[in-house]
Length: 324
Length: 282
Image 1: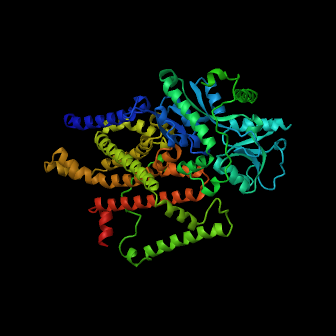
Image 2: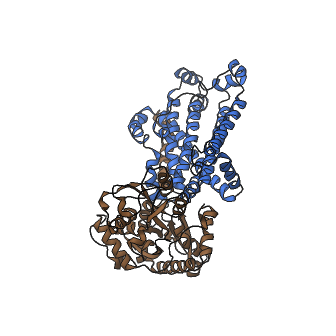
Image 3: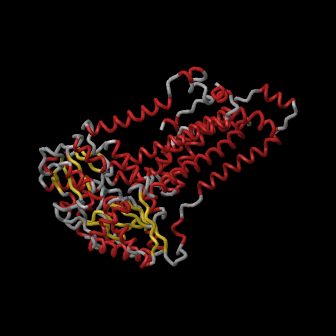
């Protein structure tokens, strides 16, 4: 009896083994080296938002290819998945906000900033992000947010830190704000049906909120520092050690892309239609951050100090090792 | 996600779902009622935002959503996304089916091994597939393998458990009759065990086909692997509400097509079975 059963049992074992090996293989694609045409393949993880337009534009204009890079852009996931994937080497570069990166560094993750992503305009009336209140709200200044419910996209991150700073700067009590986590796309609705008293929104939802009658009460990034780099491109320290030329090439190409995007606003607006679904009628009204290669140290020091004040980190970050 | 956690009922197909015989013929005109239902729903959907009961910014009227869908259906990008979604669905379902049939038949006919593995299966089975998302992202990033991991995991258990039930349902009299007629092991599997298990297997496939679509879309929406789910996420982060609804309608249509296909397959594969035969001759 057992003899006749053995082939079946063996088949079962073989199936299980195949499934396991199939499940374990792959995942380390990026270190394959140069591709056939002499270009080095690199993958960059981003979100499909207006702020990464320079990357798409630079790729389209061949600024990366000129420097020997064959870029694959991956969208989706957000910071929670891009950071571990950069650490594991599966993504070569990614786009992330500076507060998330400082927190990741403090936790000992080997990440380093290699290029600027976007900088606030430094002007409250034109910045691409703002703290807004719904139509008819009594709140007219950040200090009045005391005791209010404020929507941000992530707790313990750049949203609450910058909003608290704006409130303190206006003479209010930042400890008494009730922050709630909401996705940016849900904020405009939450504002108009009164679920929250105020919301920190970025484009394209800022323009949508303004069209719904919302009023800006603070430009939290401008308040934080007029030269603030809000988000940057980063890589893992392993890639910097193993292939510094590729990292240099990425930094150069990214910087060239930022300059190109800033110099050609119409092109930057046009490229949005290739990777977002933003209504063309909305694109004309969008507010943009500044795209430039410089990362202002003074602004990042201010961010570090505020993060210590708010208890996001224990000690101020070492900016010399944070930025390459 | 209850589909992935609750053990599926081991009921052979068709038994209670359809009225048979005379009742079905004298009953109301089903296609007509179905059409009236859809039209009614669309009229309601059109009216609610137009009357201002809900802001059209959050629920655009049906006409605008369908126009957006129609316009999208002319772009190759949309069909690539549909293709990616269906690839994830089909491949995941196929892998789960093969693995579940092979393992189910093997372990089902080895009572000792089955008893030995029951506790492990009972532990693994209730783990919702979506809980594996962090694992999928770390192992496979955003490519199709992430989708496959979730789809295969969820579908495997659905089919596997049905196969185990099917194998356990083997009629000892039939089995022994086959033995006494001198049928070999393979012949008995082919003529006794397989027909016994097939209705159960098809129930598992029908359940898994729906769950596979759910998880395929979930993976694309959350992980960002290619497909309609990712298109929904991009539209959402662009504030393009009509596009979001259009894509949701597309996933619904995909679900209907898949369901019709699986039912047709079921009727074909089980055309000899009383549940289907009764329906056909009535």
